[in-house]
Image (cartoon, rainbow, N blue to C red; front, side, top):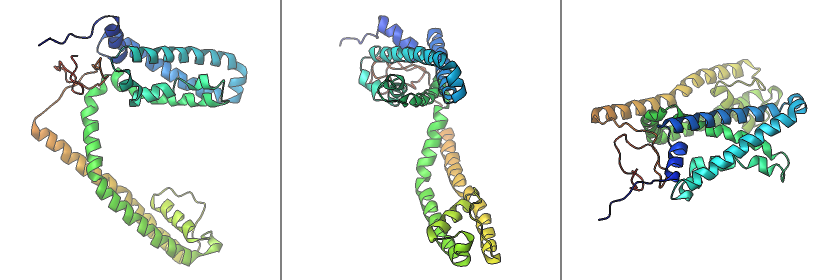
Length: 280
């Protein structure tokens, strides 16, 4: 059987720099990318201030074009450095990279579309690779599993809260009426939800003693209601974590990306991609 050869040549070197953070060149590239993303978001915010934009419009535009060109070249390099470009193009990061690159070009066709450059803030998610925080992927997976396991309980809880809000809102409508601002049952339900969640906008307030008493009850219920979903998720997360500890399996992953499908999160001792089986 013919032995599979590792990906080599300039594309392989380019792939290591762009997709991996374990090498000095890859780490430097990611840090530069991280700084440019932050700078780009700051430029968009500064441009939204009329006084700053009037005084420094040309400088801001020039800097935005420099960053946009860099991101455009980076996007092209990411496509040509892997064997299956569509894997990257239609991935989460691929879509974010594309959307964050085109707004300045579109601004010459659609006025005002450059404000979409703020989408580049989503690219800050790459900080997990830059700072080698991939070891926390396991923790994130446990949290995701806890949320998934809790979804039924939380759904039932939200349903009960909605029913309770309808009942209490209807009572407030009957007690207070139009004079206090409770002009309809939906408005009263809105006030009930705002009070239960302890937001308290203050746009509507009960005036009668009975209404104020009921409002007090709703406020006290609100504190207990907020704690319930948190407790459900925490219990599931603790259970999931204990199961992982009892299994005795500790998996260490790195930032190495597959040159074939761009999958990340491989084990330190992995020789083949867990997603497509390609030689790393």
